[in-house]
Length: 99
Image (cartoon, rainbow, N blue to C red; front, top):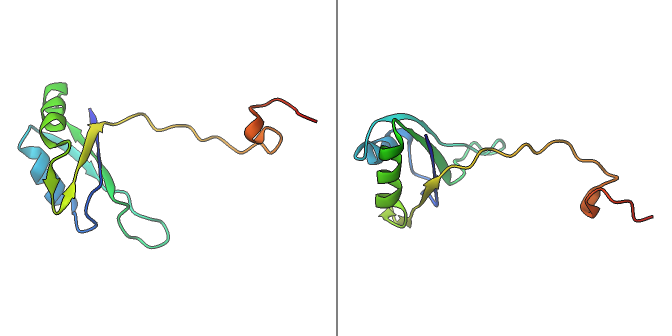
């Protein structure tokens, strides 16, 4: 059970985000990705909840809610896409050779 949380303030900590979601159930893990170059938070995070019902309750309550001066975007996290490697021959032509 993973929830995407977007439009976060750059002042958010894992502990503060955990406290907000704990009101809706058990929080297993909080992740706040940071920029590789600056080390600064990227403005979004992921929260893993204990059950689907807890996840749904948190999404319904927090999506669009104002927190720390920002309107949160909260929804079910989508699986990470496999970006693969770039193939210069395919480019934006979808694999069809135009030459």
